[in-house]
Image (cartoon, helix red, strand yellow):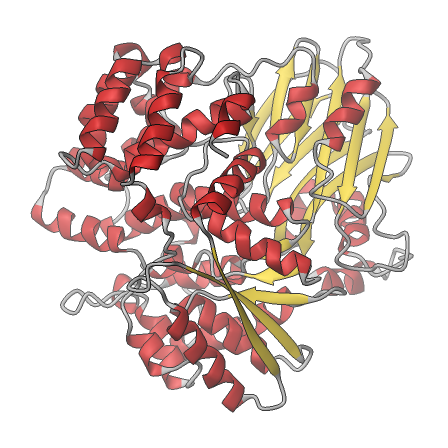
Length: 611
């Protein structure tokens, strides 16, 4: 994994070399192993490398430059070996890296054919000199990030938004018109971001920038909607098993130590089961995040998976490492996570994830496999079940849209309206709301639920995974988001994933696991718990109440500067006095004020008396 940064200077403008060096240095955590910068015409590309593949040659050195093009790439192309065989007929390769293969693909095939053939997680910038265009491209599901911003006669792009902080013309002014969407869903959707000046390249999209006149256009090369209800010529259970074997094999390609995240649930347990069967992996270290509240701990389930797989694979060394956060360490990690995100932290368990990923990094692990994405494909969330039940009881399409859009934030609607005021009600102009309006009558309810989750809600999880991994100089891969598996899962009917009477979710996954004896039966039959964190308990304690109240009352705080500080205090009192359960909203308020001081316009020193 890596970090990329670049610029296009228009109309004879000169780039500021000092700013560009500082901007790419902001990404040093993403690529601690190597650094490169290249210029071609009025385009500059910079690269920070985390070395995973082809460690002993310069073939993976970036940016890749020739007379007619320039490439900076972040990610992993899993089928690069197969593509290399095809390209070797007309090309000479210096090494064995996916970077070199991607560069040859683009040079020989162009952007469209390349995107039709590569399988991976990626974000890249490619300058084609003949066409006078630079292409900013992001993978279909959004595993790797890419942002861009126009400032006067220069256009900048980066793997993380913090790079733009080094550009003189950049303002940290928040995107206040859409701030209500943040409170409802924890993320501003689509191409918009928390900063008014910064745009996000959406998953499965290409941003084309003319290097002659600066014209910018965006177009999709992939549509999640088009993967639904297609005929796949595979037996369901056998087909899924075959796909999983192939995918785990390709996602385990690495020239550095590889491990796995383990939760005690079926998704990560299945991944570990397939990893244990892989003949190329002799030792697997798993990392588990535990909680102090033993009623919520899944440690015993995780240990049962380890013991089960050890008995089945006696020649493999499989071990488990677990960690628990205390309040002080959690708060310290929350600050670091906020810095990594450049946005308010969406999930309370993000610092807990950082805790175990940091441990993996200290152990010398450079690649981890994660079960992220399975719930989105196989109807795994309780909220999906609630939405389906809701649709059967309520025929109003508008009410169903609200059920899908608000999710857990539904009970906070009136409070958010008061907090943001009439001027800052941008929810109905958000990308995710517009998508619902456009598609509510176009697809079946069960397809709509899955599409919405894959297209929008998944993005917060993938952002968490990328930033936490990269902060530790470590790559986290999501095998469930393989394009072949996405297409297979989305070709299935709801009856293959969910039993209404028993409320059984991820049906085909569980049937396959049971049939192939891949994991213990108790893991297959257990109810989904989710990634627990002790913050759920701390969010009702006075020490956090006092911390949040001090930030909200601060004259230089976010709420006093942009919203209604008095209304914010009222919400805090209602929650901590136990008159109203507003956990999600209070968490969003808390992390927004933290972000304001770590990445925004607030004062970082304010936090020192608490962290």
